[in-house]
Structure formats: structure tokens, C-alpha cells
Length: 355
Image (cartoon, rainbow, N blue to C red; front, side, top):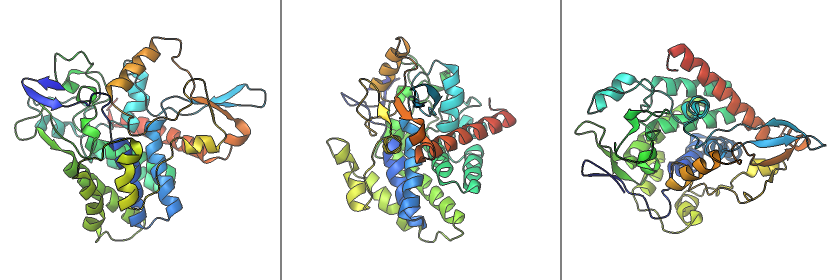
């Protein structure tokens, strides 16, 4: 556990701290909301998989020609090399930590001083990014933007940078970047946790309640996109919020996903399905797909990232994809959408003076 001034901030399981919003919300909840909003099964899948892929792409795939020469590399949208400023600028900020309303963030803090990069739930910038994606009518752009928008609830009060405002425990050996010192607590929809940085009355976080509000907002956006009302919002959200109010099943990822698969009749998530569909061959010792429930801000993942940075493995590719299979594939279209999302975000962040 992490303790700050005698207060328990977050409890880390012995082996992993699962950042469950990464898939419980980004895939299962988004797929449920999209389907209830009136999207077809194929459309709902495209939106939800696009959302979840943001957390899955930690290393690039190499696109190779017939001679095995590298033509291009795919997008990286999640990474643990937090000390590299390019990661904060090109990955964390556009995909996971969209800067929020500094006045709101400051008002919630005990010290009254939030940085300009502090995330706030449903912030004007996060909404602008989502609305811009909706206007493209590109379902993959929409899924990617929904990931960043949803993270504005989970990551509120934290920022993409290494800075004191992210410290829950000043004595922690872990750097004050993102919500690393809170481990996966901010991402877990079934978790209640304490944030000692906040003013009295603000410190107790009930993620199920937070994420229910996020789900309702997203449902409204999706229904508005389809030019339909959202009179049934409370019933749609309650079906997913009821799951969050219960303890998670013990066991592996399949057990943790069972509530969504059985109760909501949602197809299970298949990691890296679009890359494999495009002919992707995973390189070397990383042949096993990542456990989507274990992805995110876990102690193990950050330590692995540090080890990679210190070794010759830094910059290694996830695998190779033949160019002829990649062209026109869903994975190529998703990568194009991710690049467009990043470019749009960096443009408006610069325009608004947040970077």
C-alpha cells in the first residue's frame, strides 16, 4: 500500500495492480453504450476496439516490404518511458491526460495550486476533442477520442508530466508522473480510494459513481450523434453501474470479464486481433498478447518499462506486418485515425496554450 500522512491512499495487490478502466470501461462499457445508442454490432465493435487499442499499442509494429525492408512503423499510443518528454507530449497528453480546467482543479486541491496540465472531468478541451471526432463520422476516430474523454474522469487531478502535483506521497520512491503513485486505483470502476492531495470533503473517490457519470455523458454524445434522444439513459447506465458496485470476480482475465460477457451479452475482447488480421507476426519473446486487464499503471509494467529503457531493447518493435496485407486493413485505418487524433490534439493544445 501507499501511505501519506497516515492515510491509506491505494492498496496494491501482491502481484499486480490492475488498471481496470483500461478494458472494463474502454472496451466493455463503450461497446455496451454504443450498442444501446443504436449502433450495429459491427459499428459498436469498431468503436470499442478502437478505444481499447489505445492502451494496447505500447510498441510499434514494423510494416515491411517483400524484401523484409521496413517501410513504416505503426503508432504508439501508450508507453511507460515517462522520463522522455516526447512521451508526455505525444502519448500521455493527447490520449490519456487531456489538460482540463485549471481553476476547477485548483479549487479541489488542499494547496489550491494545480498546474496548467491538470486533468478535470468533462473538461472543455476533452469535449472539443470528442466533438471533433464525432464530426468526422469516422468510427475509429470516435473510439480513440472516447478513450481520452473517459480518461478525463479516471485521471482527474493528475497530469501527463513529472511534477509535484502528481505526488500522493512525497516520500515515495516512485516518480510523480500521471497517477503512478496511486497505482491502478483511479482506473478501477469498482474501487474506492483516498486522494490526500485534495481539500477536505474532496478526498474520498468512489470510482463507480464517477464512471457512471462518464458513461451517461458518453451515451448522450452517442445518441446526439445519431440525432436521437437519450430518455433511457438511466436504465442503460444502471446496467453497467450495477456491475461496478459488486466485488470483481477472482481469477484470470476471463473471470473478470465474465460479468460483462454474461450479463450484457458482449463478445469477449481479443487482444491485437486487428494486427493479426493484417498478418502481424509477433517478434521474439513477446509472442504472447498483453493481458488487457493488467495493462496500465501497475508497478510491474512501470518497472518493465524502466528495464527496457536501460537496455538495447528500447525502441524494439512488437512484430512485423507484410505491407501488402497491411494496406487497406482495419489496423492501417486505425493507425491513420490515431495519427489524426494526435495531430488534432497537439494543434489545439498549442492554440490554447496548454503546451
